[in-house]
Image (cartoon, rainbow, N blue to C red):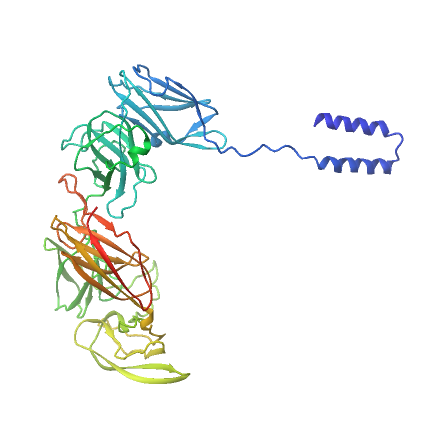
Length: 567
């Protein structure tokens, strides 16, 4: 560019005497415009190539290693991405290993004394990247031996979550040369690796021996299973490492190991503080699910109440029918083994600092459910149990051929705890209906009453539903039951059945869409999934999905054969 500018200036100076000022200005502008069109050369295509190894010292797969430093040189400047997490040194050493870069080289410095006649493996996983573009070398495997030969046997497999069957990425997989009860509670592994994003793992340089296999989500990074919130997976048997001439052979081998990772059940039940969102309602939240309960209340007066548990079975709610004046004591027995005692106080309005907050009067909320379902009755759902009532009037307005047909119907509330009432009317499909309910028609035991309710809807037709018939076949030799769940496309449980022998189940009135079948092998026959316990050597109960996705169409019947057999 300097040379070009110099020649232009010289050219202008040569003709300055013969040009008028105006001509000189015009000539200069033309030259500058020509200069603006000059295109600088681009840097070429973007570098997307990861670094390549050009030298190793000592060479990969070296034997009789006696040094403390390994130097790996690449074809460009490199950096290390979180080597503490992304470099696996196996067998693991007791002393800290220093990983660093110098120019185009990666340095591995060991302080520990290496074992004799042992093959060591260093796995760099998504750790080495070039300095300028950050292109990562997905995996680089370096091995050396302190003996006369490199061990070349392999073990490989996958780790999945026992409850979801999804792959567990980034967890440690550990091998032990012995099978004793202290593994891995107090003993660090003989060999170590990590799972990739697909949950797969491989050990490349093993002795031709049998190994006990574990997987661990190691929260405190000590390679010991010692925290209650750590996840673990373990093999029941020892696995023999094998030699494979090519990778394609061992990846299709039947010796593929599947580990199902789980967290042991928390058996310490805890009742959280009771909450009272409004007069007469008390919620008792538990840390763990409650499968059975019994409640007794003692107060300064006789307390009548209604209780229920939520769908997740972790919160018991109590609704009062008669109220105590000052305080009451509630006794809750859960799952026949635990009794909690809680003092109840009357509900008090919240106050702001320095002044009372203006509160709105609570109302009895009413929701209309199953409005469009042809085979389920439309129902009134109340936010609080309602008081007995005779002949509460409602109006049903039907629009037929553009004309409105109004019908008065009557609902009665029995002298029991009622939080749901069916609407006593036969609704025809494909007709637009409106339900009207006047305010103050129902009263809750807490003194609240309802606002005006107006709800419009129409019922579906028979052609909006399909039926599914499944012939389940089982010859399970473990004597286990199978919990069979029909799942909708959003993984919601539509139906749940317990199957102990071959049988046929008909799923009627299904909405069109995709469905899948999830199966739990219920070993202890308690009708729910149970996690594992390593100390008791109990594997988590198996959960598996039937491979075929079932598509339901309106006004169609589908029939399938399903064999129940845990993998």
